[in-house]
Image (cartoon, rainbow, N blue to C red; front, side):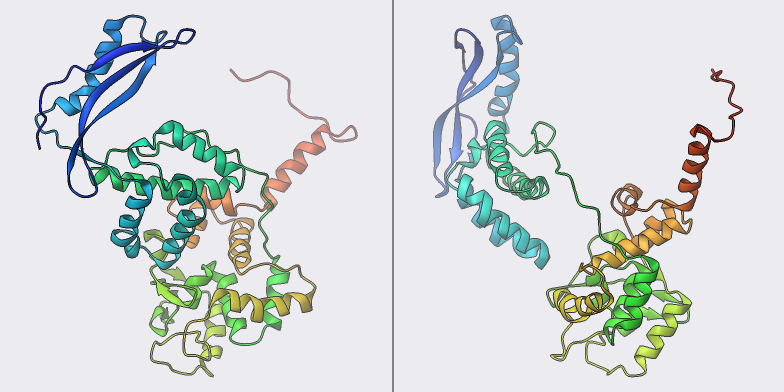
Length: 388
């Protein structure tokens, strides 16, 4: 349905102390049953300070009305957020990876729908979004709040693309909760990792060796198949991942890059394969039920008993990835090499998340500076003149 007539709308000032220009107009919307209804809409254009004269406010209002006055104008669609979320679940969410789908379902069920389910999609503007962020910050961490807003952003962007009247999430305009002080990531020393691999029984010993010597993610390790091991080229191909016993794609496109297999790791895997039992899926590691291991079971039954025996504080399997990255940087690998090995799309991720080690070169440099500054230290040859 094309527009009924050209609109100029109605512009007026609201408020006395802090006056704002408000524009009103009529717009056709399509209801969920397919019928078209003409409704009144209004929008705060700006303050009297921003637009001192009516003419300036009218110019701004005209740009906003250009959409409904355009010959190509068609009625926008309206629905409550709960109604659209149900459509999004059945049309979009089913195509996501199981891990991502479960997280989105949790965000909807626990946070978004209880607060925004009855709100119309068209009313989810910046102010409502900011109020929602503030409510989230009262109950969840800053990271969880960001993840929940990410889910909301995807849903509203889809609604916009489908023709619904709504305002997508603009993180640049939202004030998100400040980050909390994070605990340092757990990682093993080289000696601790070596002891863990030595003490652990099979198949966990080989799992831990692969994790520590390659930095692979646990899901990628548990999804390894025999065809992924190239002993001739000493390479491991990462083609899939496991999440809660289910096969899925890897985390990102960069994660599919093959990684080198060290000689020591090649020997350990070959020894493990001497007692390996063939299976239809050709899985390198398979549980008694003929399925891939679940990461939590590997932690509970394979890692924690070893850590307890060695008097090492409990942690998860991701500590091996942090261990590998730390040892890479400590032994002099460049950030580019570490990025390639960990298969990050951006080197800043490698340094920001996994660069939690003070290497010998950094420590030696600091020691030299400290020796120059110590009262009993050597005299500096610095003249005090700065190079211009």
